[in-house]
Image (tube, rainbow, N blue to C red):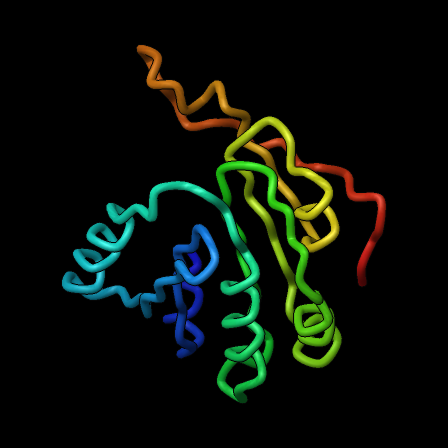
Length: 151
Protein backbone atom coordinates (compact mmCIF):
# COMPACT_ATOMS: atom_id res chain seq x y z
CA UNK A 1 0.00 0.00 0.00
CA UNK A 2 2.87 2.37 0.79
CA UNK A 3 4.34 1.85 -2.67
CA UNK A 4 0.99 2.37 -4.40
CA UNK A 5 0.41 5.64 -2.53
CA UNK A 6 3.90 6.90 -3.32
CA UNK A 7 3.56 5.90 -6.98
CA UNK A 8 0.18 7.63 -7.28
CA UNK A 9 1.66 10.81 -5.77
CA UNK A 10 4.84 10.53 -7.87
CA UNK A 11 7.02 10.23 -4.77
CA UNK A 12 9.86 7.80 -4.08
CA UNK A 13 9.37 5.03 -1.53
CA UNK A 14 12.22 3.32 0.32
CA UNK A 15 12.50 0.20 2.41
CA UNK A 16 15.20 -0.10 5.06
CA UNK A 17 16.30 -3.37 6.63
CA UNK A 18 18.24 -2.90 9.85
CA UNK A 19 19.76 -4.92 12.66
CA UNK A 20 22.91 -4.27 14.70
CA UNK A 21 24.95 -1.06 14.49
CA UNK A 22 26.10 -0.47 10.92
CA UNK A 23 23.73 -3.07 9.44
CA UNK A 24 21.44 -1.00 7.24
CA UNK A 25 20.32 -1.76 3.69
CA UNK A 26 18.14 0.47 1.54
CA UNK A 27 15.95 -0.36 -1.43
CA UNK A 28 13.96 2.09 -3.54
CA UNK A 29 10.58 0.48 -4.21
CA UNK A 30 8.61 0.61 -7.43
CA UNK A 31 5.59 -1.20 -8.87
CA UNK A 32 7.34 -2.82 -11.82
CA UNK A 33 7.73 -6.59 -12.13
CA UNK A 34 11.47 -6.17 -11.60
CA UNK A 35 10.75 -3.98 -8.56
CA UNK A 36 8.66 -6.75 -6.99
CA UNK A 37 11.47 -9.28 -7.59
CA UNK A 38 13.91 -6.93 -5.88
CA UNK A 39 11.60 -6.61 -2.85
CA UNK A 40 11.34 -10.38 -2.47
CA UNK A 41 15.12 -10.76 -2.71
CA UNK A 42 15.62 -7.87 -0.27
CA UNK A 43 13.23 -9.37 2.30
CA UNK A 44 15.07 -12.72 2.24
CA UNK A 45 18.25 -11.21 3.63
CA UNK A 46 19.13 -11.47 7.28
CA UNK A 47 21.68 -9.76 9.47
CA UNK A 48 21.64 -12.45 12.14
CA UNK A 49 19.70 -10.69 14.87
CA UNK A 50 19.73 -7.53 16.90
CA UNK A 51 17.64 -4.43 16.46
CA UNK A 52 19.45 -1.12 16.13
CA UNK A 53 17.05 1.49 14.80
CA UNK A 54 19.36 4.51 15.07
CA UNK A 55 20.93 4.16 11.60
CA UNK A 56 17.54 3.75 9.93
CA UNK A 57 16.16 6.81 11.75
CA UNK A 58 19.18 8.90 10.78
CA UNK A 59 18.87 7.88 7.12
CA UNK A 60 15.12 8.57 7.10
CA UNK A 61 15.73 12.01 8.66
CA UNK A 62 18.21 12.83 5.85
CA UNK A 63 15.62 11.87 3.23
CA UNK A 64 12.94 13.96 4.96
CA UNK A 65 15.12 17.08 4.57
CA UNK A 66 14.88 16.78 0.77
CA UNK A 67 12.07 18.68 -1.01
CA UNK A 68 10.75 15.51 -2.69
CA UNK A 69 10.10 14.05 0.75
CA UNK A 70 7.87 16.81 2.07
CA UNK A 71 4.70 15.32 3.61
CA UNK A 72 6.27 11.84 3.63
CA UNK A 73 5.46 9.44 6.44
CA UNK A 74 7.61 6.88 8.19
CA UNK A 75 6.56 3.30 8.92
CA UNK A 76 8.69 1.34 11.39
CA UNK A 77 8.19 -2.44 11.40
CA UNK A 78 10.04 -4.46 14.01
CA UNK A 79 9.87 -7.89 15.57
CA UNK A 80 10.27 -6.73 19.14
CA UNK A 81 11.05 -4.03 21.67
CA UNK A 82 13.63 -1.47 20.65
CA UNK A 83 16.02 0.43 22.83
CA UNK A 84 16.59 3.71 21.03
CA UNK A 85 19.42 5.56 22.70
CA UNK A 86 19.99 8.18 20.04
CA UNK A 87 18.84 11.76 19.88
CA UNK A 88 15.37 11.75 18.32
CA UNK A 89 15.50 15.47 17.49
CA UNK A 90 15.74 14.81 13.73
CA UNK A 91 12.48 12.85 13.67
CA UNK A 92 10.81 15.37 15.99
CA UNK A 93 11.93 18.14 13.64
CA UNK A 94 10.58 16.24 10.62
CA UNK A 95 7.21 15.95 12.33
CA UNK A 96 6.90 19.71 12.71
CA UNK A 97 8.61 20.96 9.54
CA UNK A 98 7.61 18.26 7.02
CA UNK A 99 4.32 17.03 8.42
CA UNK A 100 5.81 13.58 8.92
CA UNK A 101 3.67 11.00 10.70
CA UNK A 102 5.47 8.04 12.30
CA UNK A 103 3.53 4.78 12.44
CA UNK A 104 4.86 1.67 14.14
CA UNK A 105 3.99 -1.97 13.55
CA UNK A 106 5.40 -4.39 16.12
CA UNK A 107 5.25 -8.12 15.38
CA UNK A 108 4.94 -8.90 19.08
CA UNK A 109 2.63 -8.60 22.06
CA UNK A 110 4.07 -5.31 23.34
CA UNK A 111 5.53 -2.24 21.69
CA UNK A 112 7.87 -1.02 24.38
CA UNK A 113 8.69 2.45 25.64
CA UNK A 114 10.90 3.38 22.67
CA UNK A 115 8.24 2.64 20.06
CA UNK A 116 5.58 4.43 22.11
CA UNK A 117 7.84 7.48 22.30
CA UNK A 118 8.74 7.45 18.58
CA UNK A 119 5.35 6.76 17.03
CA UNK A 120 2.23 8.82 16.41
CA UNK A 121 0.30 5.57 15.96
CA UNK A 122 1.39 2.12 17.12
CA UNK A 123 -0.05 -1.29 16.23
CA UNK A 124 0.74 -4.75 17.59
CA UNK A 125 0.20 -8.11 15.90
CA UNK A 126 1.01 -10.43 18.80
CA UNK A 127 3.57 -13.23 18.48
CA UNK A 128 1.02 -16.07 18.42
CA UNK A 129 0.12 -15.22 14.82
CA UNK A 130 3.62 -16.07 13.59
CA UNK A 131 4.30 -19.50 15.12
CA UNK A 132 3.38 -21.43 12.00
CA UNK A 133 0.33 -23.17 13.44
CA UNK A 134 -2.00 -25.00 11.13
CA UNK A 135 -4.59 -22.64 9.74
CA UNK A 136 -2.35 -19.57 10.12
CA UNK A 137 -4.31 -16.44 9.34
CA UNK A 138 -3.51 -12.77 9.02
CA UNK A 139 -3.17 -11.28 12.51
CA UNK A 140 -5.62 -8.75 13.87
CA UNK A 141 -3.90 -5.49 14.62
CA UNK A 142 -4.29 -4.01 18.06
CA UNK A 143 -3.92 -0.24 18.23
CA UNK A 144 -1.98 0.97 21.26
CA UNK A 145 -3.38 3.99 23.09
CA UNK A 146 -0.36 6.24 23.43
CA UNK A 147 0.03 8.44 26.50
CA UNK A 148 1.30 11.41 24.50
CA UNK A 149 -0.95 12.66 21.72
CA UNK A 150 0.92 14.44 18.91
CA UNK A 151 -0.91 16.75 16.55
